[in-house]
Amino acid sequence: MSSTNVDDILRRAVDGARLSCADGVVLMRDAGLIELGRAADLVCKKLHPEPYRTYNIDRNINYTNVCAAVCDFCAFYRKVGHGEAYVLDREELLKKIEETVALGGDQILMQGGLHPDLPFDWYLELLHDIKARFPQVNIHGFSPPELHFFAKLYRMPLKTVLERLKAAGLGSLPGGGGEILSDRVRKEITRGKVMTDDWINVHRVWHELGGKSTATMMYGHIETIEERIEHFERVRSLQDETGGLTAFISWTFQPEHTEMADVPAAGAYEYLRVQAISRLYLDNVPNIQSSWVTQGPKVGHLALYFGANDMGSLMIEENVVASAGTVYYLTLEEIRRSIREAGYIPRQRDVYYNYIDAEPAVAAEPALAG
Image 1: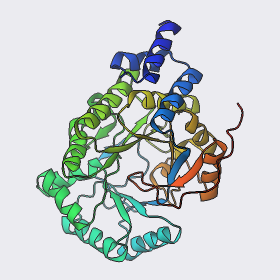
Image 2 (image 1 turned 45 degrees about the vertical axis):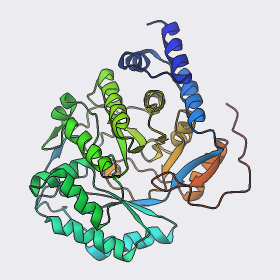
Image 3 (image 1 turned 90 degrees about the horizontal axis):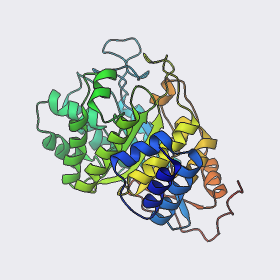
Image 4 (image 1 turned 180 degrees about the horizontal axis):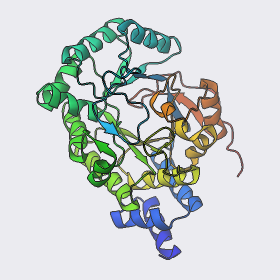
């Protein structure tokens, strides 16, 4: 494919035209890193002309690592009865939230495995207990695979499951368990886990109930470039239908300690390319998060030049990615400095991307040359 064709696609994207699946495949196959970055940055600045780039403060609490599914890419899960299987004690879980609030956090990201033995009332009581102790904290919880599993395990309509969880205090849904939204890929690398249409439907029903959620993508394993674009297309179509997605977050597969450890890890070059293409393709998703947790602080900073307008979370705790051997941590000041060095003013936001800090009076530092 000629560079002229790539240039034409990028020009149309910057001008606000919607890209087709074929356009996306061309960009995945032929576009260079720098040209993608320039185009994604221009689109990001059109969507977010404000002088701010955002972050939030939350904690990823994995209430259990017990999972009935088998995912070849996961180093975190354990089967029932395994010596390392756990369910967090309620007071320990509440202590983690207390520590988060003390650091200025307003949210927890709460996910677990597909536990086959916990009753539904356990989850309702958990939400009630959290909201009773911390009414100000948003519970960003239970991934689509968990929620689909609840409906099957407890033999309830999905809508009923979501209504009852929402009434008990669930605030928003994370986009976990998305991996690649292609059934060929999902059947190849998972067993006993939600397929594409049902993953999408969890979001759809939640949005119909007035809720908001995020979408994710984990790539760099067995998927084709066409399947990466299929993933983007499914996310964009859902957003056309419901408008309920607040953000998109992507990251590369971390193979260490998994059943797919022989798969070569995708690097920073591929991460920045795919993120830039996501910004160009997902024209109706307002926010793109940098994934410094998997990519490291330097690449996480560069992501602000490749279509991201958000540095994600302080991430006081993270267990799933860390189980695969990838452990990056940034302090709150390091996150803010990274945003300043990109030429923007850091602002703390909530899950809905509302600013929750005082408007700063100082200007951002100029962007670094090069």
